[in-house]
Length: 149
Image (tube, rainbow, N blue to C red; front, side):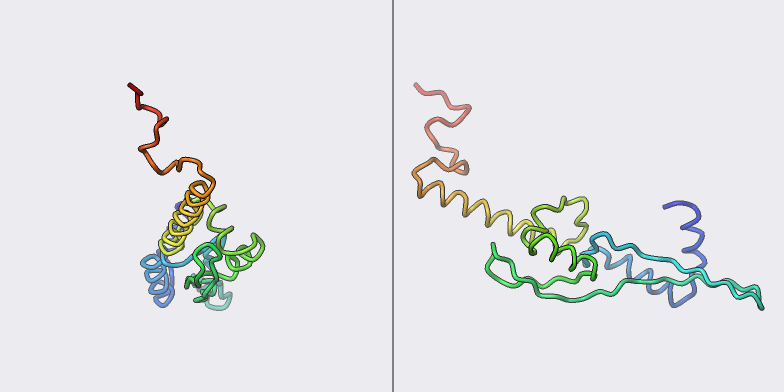
């Protein structure tokens, strides 16, 4: 954070300061996507007063269908993120293609982990049906690191 931003945050009006503290405490509970938090500075010419307030994006509690998990997943997210999920073709595609560093949400990370595990299980089951040794089984005869006697 730059010094200008820190200075503006220190000058927040009391209700905005309370909102900002709430936001800081719960920032990992919301899927933000590319949504930014905006600080608004209002200047009043008559009184030469300046007020700094916070403009928060709208949060929505949504239930999205996961094809991989075959169930609905409840998440809190912004409009921008919801639009981005639609553009990518669904929740599973969004979670798989979004790196963890951009996800920045504990619930979304947990769902991503579940989706990845389910995909690996499906892949292992498909390989077993085809008769190929599963990459998950370490007891395969030709596994690297094992010498045959």
